Length: 489
Image: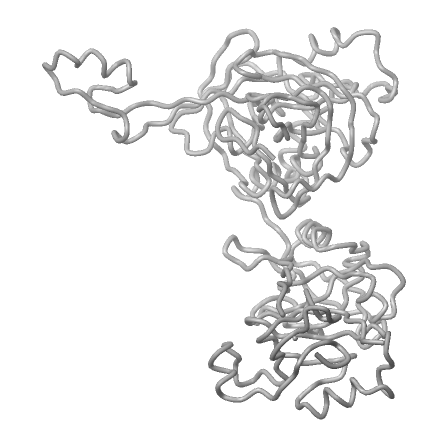
């Protein structure tokens, strides 16, 4: 993916938190006569209008161009001394009399309240010393930064005007469907007030740009400078904020991505009320599962995540969770994968008590706990470890041995870690690509392993017949991992 800075689209994602604060909601209700969105009638979002001209003309006053400037320290470019015959070239290189130079960027944004609240992308205004909002009429207002959320690439600005400003409303992005018509307005390549139209091409896109990726994909033309601009539905409501493109050329090839409006309005509400976004915190690391692990846990589909570690001071540590628990649902919402858990935890109200459905020892149970608040320096909830390939033999194709002091020093194995050491892995064996030299097997088939006798008892034909998938819990470099290994026939 092309990831741009300043005036270029940049990828990001985020989590649904809470709506606008009550005070902001009531204020906006009293300003409803300034809204340019039309929710008075139901419009078929799948039926293309004869023209987008009326919609564009109505919405244009609430869409703005964002210009920023930044002072850059005098390094890199040449600077000629006063009195030098080449002094006149300092201006050419953008230097001021003190040797500093100014850099600018362009982006897009839109007004969401009559009193001048403006939404744009964080990357559009990041590190800016000065931010200006330029309206379609040419009017320019200096903007103050209210707050940002780099995780979702959302920024909230405020401008002051003697008269109420025209604004637009957010749509319910959860109701948007693939195939619905949409329209983008923005400032591509500095050409303000540019309009493009298309459809929603896909939902829930993960483009590997952030921990909470959940983009709306559109084929409406989005280019550099559209960053932070709105993606409208046919009611003139904002369905998303244009943020990213995938392009081999840097221009639109019909792969544009927008942050869903529900996410943006929620993050903006948090910023307006608290000055920063607030996210729920579970206090665990997890990994996804495959069909083999699902079979080992006795579930039909490879959906859910396994808890691989629990933060000592985190919310989960205060409840009855264990490493190895398979999480199926969180607060009544099904958990399909790592990213899904990240989003559902983040959007859960801080301080609320939630129920988590898990599988432990092939038995289903429910554990309740109180959701904490994720701090910016808190370890990420859903770090999924990637197994590495290695090289060696027995029913799982791995040579096992007891853990001695030399092995603990060599592989950094803590004294409280019990199990058997993987000494080598056969290149043509079932453990290849999963286990590696230096791993410590701590459990097999949900049974604790503390010696070679424990391991070989489980690996015996009476306990694990050839051809069965064996669930193995592994300690590797301070992290817990789970693998299913088909024993040799």
